[in-house]
Image (cartoon, rainbow over all chains, first blue to last red; front, side):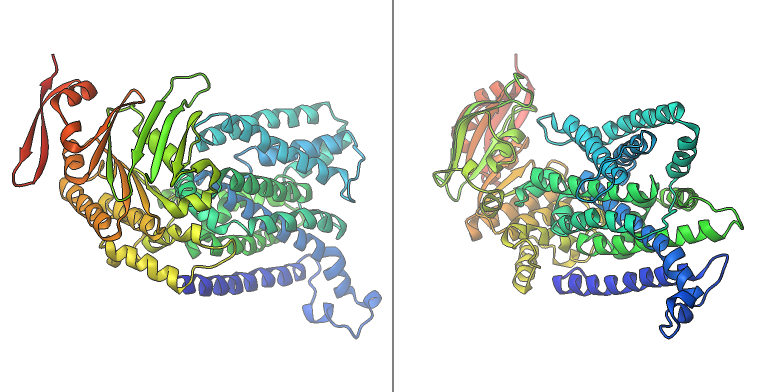
Length: 338
Length: 262
């Protein structure tokens, strides 16, 4: 069942299957909304773009948002897979390790104090997000690595929870002292929202996400081994400290990119990896691409629900993921599949 | 000598108690060396040092005369495999997945396991009588089955040294005997050198060619079974009074604890 040729076949089948699902979600989601449009008309090249309302709605008004959802879902799901394997813990995720909150604090500071810096063309908010996520993870990692028995996963999680609470308090502090207009902007952002109106922020987030995914692409076998124990992995030839560094840096990079686009969208990083593992098994060569694609489709669908299911009121996507994810997670626990 | 440790010291906390205190020992090719000592005497730490997963604070460990600190993790894994006391998989791997993980140090970064890796894994499973478990979920196996799968994974690593940390600790006596027979067979057929830590003095007497006695992180003695397993040494190690006799049917020394030493 798990013979090598079989793993290759399963990877191809999984990527094809989940890829088709994600592509379908990304194509269908922009068609739904207050003004229903037709895909055939939107893609009809015989009508000039300026006259083609369907194409304008599709490409200008809705597709950026859908692609942002796909990118955010993908990054958070992959980061979740990496954190869970690395810590051998089903509860490890960007939000439980303080990484999301670190990025959030970074963004809050950038938004509230109108920080205006760009580096390599990346604007202030994403920059602040990366700094925040990497900083939070660095602190958590330094605390747990200070012990000579090796990185302790329990300590890492506890440190993450404590740091999350601390950073959360700082986020609220900034909210309280901020100008009322900035507070309004940041509250909406803090709920996790995909109000992306152009392609520019997507491109800015795509670069770090791509870099992160390329690093993670070197890791599937290492993650398999580390998930049966870091000593077991080391004795089979894995350079564990190096693998941990690569994994943590790349996962915090993709988390930072996701938070910069959509705010701290919860539950994707914790739920999607579990759903994917239930479907495709444990092998990370299959799990990683499956999580990237399923995470994309999942968030696109969640945002579609948030956008359309409640009439004129648009729900932030972070609320939908929690509304769907919370009960699902409880059901998983009830079924004892974790 | 295949493996040599000279004056190896190690503490888990900076300036803390030395869990290993100037440990010296030598392991000959093809031998089965038993590591005996009470809880906290440093057996597991010594195995970690020998496998290179911890770096000693002082002293040096050589493999074929080369300091193991100069070998990469991958090179070391091709020479030395480890069987820990217990293995838990966080996710739903199959038994064959776990065995195939032993092939890691032989594969390039992006290389997939090939037909020969699969053949090696299947041979390792045949050697541990676990072929029928191939598709079973590792987490659902019994303790003895898990331990044999982990040993198969170590065999798939194709190393010439096997370090085993209390391999029979959680097993019933039928599985204990089975693991002991398996290790003896592997040593005879493949010439695998083994270092086995255990609390089971009778298992050590049956299995090993030589014993290292550890107390408070120090080597009390390294000697043959007959010379090491004496009532005096057992008293010094565990503080108990024990009868040591030759068991005719078993064909090895047996130790029966009688009472606390006075």
